[in-house]
View 1 (cartoon, each protein chain N blue to C red):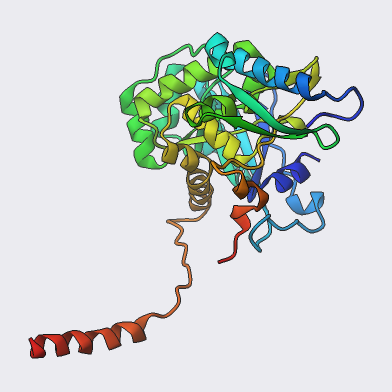
View 2 (spheres, rainbow over the protein chains, first blue to last red; view 1 turned 90 degrees about the vertical axis):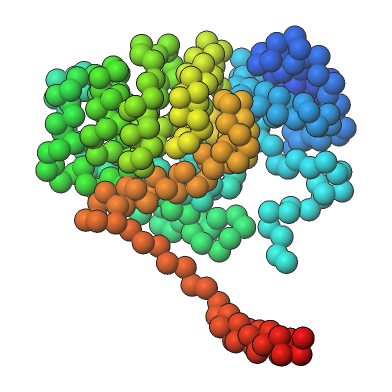
Length: 97
Length: 249
């Protein structure tokens, strides 16, 4: 999420932002964590990222603690995490059995 | 404004904080803003059918034992707050807060290096009394130096309290500084909590703090009852079947 006004990042800048967040929190080892951006929508600023399961905690904490993008305040909101891509299409927290 | 973001992200109860610093000469406890003045009708929590609770909370920054007298005074305004938290600045005050003061939360400073080390006796007494330790995560978003202090102070707290009685909260002043509940639980993993403790730090421990505040307001205690569906008929039919099996064998 970014406040209104200002340029929106494109896909490459978004990947750079994720790597920067990892580097700020976990250093070079964190920045070396292989992260893939599977999809990225510039309009809604939402993306699907893929990471190895052992690196989930590092990536998630790095994204949570990121505060600034090009000197502008920003916030990452993680909507869903799951090991399967198909599970991302439904919201399991509102599941009514 | 911030509150609308909270509701969209998925919190079910929010506490509005009012900080009182005792360094200035005259401080009066102001009556808390009643939540009904802010919203005509509270929106519904995402996923359940209950409305969001908005509570009021008071934080006292104490650097002198005489400031604690305020808590014992019969000022009517203090009783209007749902949760009371204290922010001790010295080791003596930390000890007093954990053992004798009538508060619900003890705030742990995250913005600077702790001037004192935690010791086990006051921390264990606080855990027995039902007092929770609070960590803030918003400074970690703003500044990288404060990030280091947050993590180091949190880790030293975990070593002493073994992960019990910890609450993680945000001191957000802007809607962009807020993070979702699962994100905050993940931060607990960074601080050294186990997975279940981290999730509890955001959910069950917070609820326990709310109940502790209510207990403090009332005379002796609070009991929460939940309606359970009747299962008596099933048990009765199960018993004769067992008896039958015994006689046959």
